[in-house]
Image (cartoon, rainbow, N blue to C red; front, side, top):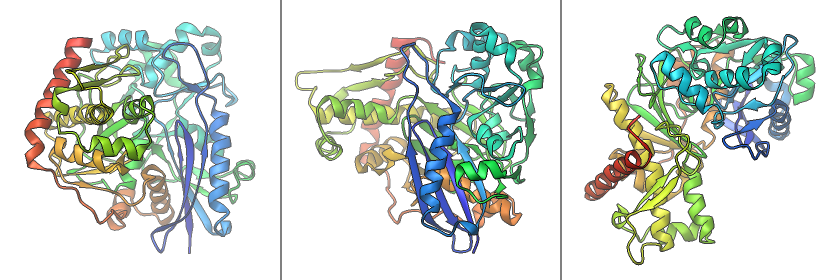
Length: 482
């Protein structure tokens, strides 16, 4: 029975799953942790691509140690979106990669937004390219290839410079509706930039085979088929089984994301909803926030509580937190586009600073930021009938309840927590079998936990009032709605 590997190369580590195609189950897994390069420069978030190679080798090695590696026939890669990997003419890394959470290019993003008549957030690759040209002319002079993190892993494995539309649609220089590069936007950054972007590939085609050198370095069988891969959100949609309209996914990690499949492109001029393609040939409108699990973790650490203690105390608090709102922009924010925003707590009364109330307020805050995305998507005609939760925060029973009550939607929970790695494996299995990815996932849906959380209508009014305060306070504190 054939095996495939799904590899997710994220901001904090790499995770590998081994998926048995015939039995449709995960049979082994491995992981490796790493961190950002420490920096005192405000807004900077960087990693060297060699970190991803080392982390991938560790994660893959741990996973393959539990199986017969000769049975592995294909691999798919999920990667953190938007990161800029600049390469020279020989494919060598010019400098550290700037990551999705790097907002050092806020000024360049504002300049491009003004030129293009849209809101381009500094997380997108385009602003990082403009920053590189302005601030590091030596690096810019050497630039010949622009890749995203998962593309770099694909290049490392196969030697090819290619990009698929899902991840490409997070660069800021991609025409999502046409599924093609936007040469006019590229020329706004530099007249020769178009030459540095790679060939686009379709969602269902292999991009090559793993070379002997890469196989040896990563502990993979040589000649392995390499699927096109995609960004982590696109792969998470596959891993959560959300390939049909109406099924939305919320991912609760360091960043928070909300997305759902769409049969038509959605262009939101405010920049609040990213106009992404998905990994199946459809579209994946998406909201991303920079402050999700880190907000509640900040409160938990401040009070010296473990997870269970903080949750138990917060479960005693009422929905809406007695009028207290935690404004969650501890690291600035991407959506809304307020990179220089900060956190705040409002509505305090005597006794309000008790740890349970603060912890629940932090969970509500991260939830409301995601709910903003649903409201925007509904304004574009999308309709959610179910919400699937993934990511580390999805295991918190209180947070599950808060999200169900705020969104007033039933919640389901994919059984595999590492949805992006599973999505990469499912894509690899589809490509191996020559089946369209969307059809493969529809025919082989990833399992969900038996539990479904239904919204409590008794909490709807309090949560709606708290959400309205959240929205109004953010606009009052940090500027006009964007």
